[in-house]
Image 1 (cartoon, rainbow, N blue to C red):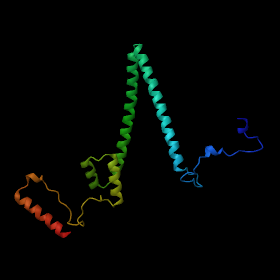
Image 2: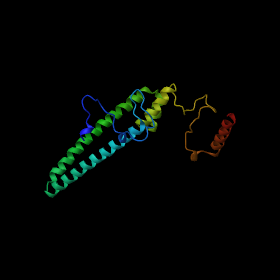
Image 3: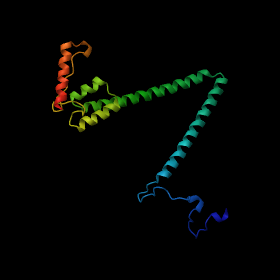
Image 4: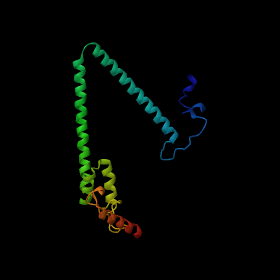
Length: 185
């Protein structure tokens, strides 16, 4: 133990060979101060294990506290605490929904009117709207899957009624139109 601490005039000794490990890291650190991936994952795994242990201890302590209050007959105090937690969570939830609604509205305002109708019709959520608006804005105002008059076979015209309500003549016309589209390709 006494020979592990260096004298003041010797400087700092390198760590013993056992601590350095027998093999070099797979990805050496660069001059920027990057951390080797093996070291990164090892530290992250230890951190996650420590966080899980702290959470488990906190959960255990809370369970013991609740059991003690229940044994003492302090149900009103427990109910009051739970109500306060619920109020806080409801407030946080409302703030989150307000923030998400503002982001949704801001993205919707950036889109052309045709695309706004598509978003409203299909009730796109925030994540889908972010993806859709990125595609629309990078493609000059059109979604990449929208048919255009320039696309093969021309623009698709949506029928005004469901297929099962079509007459035989309408079905034959539709089949002929589809055959013509396929031939045009």
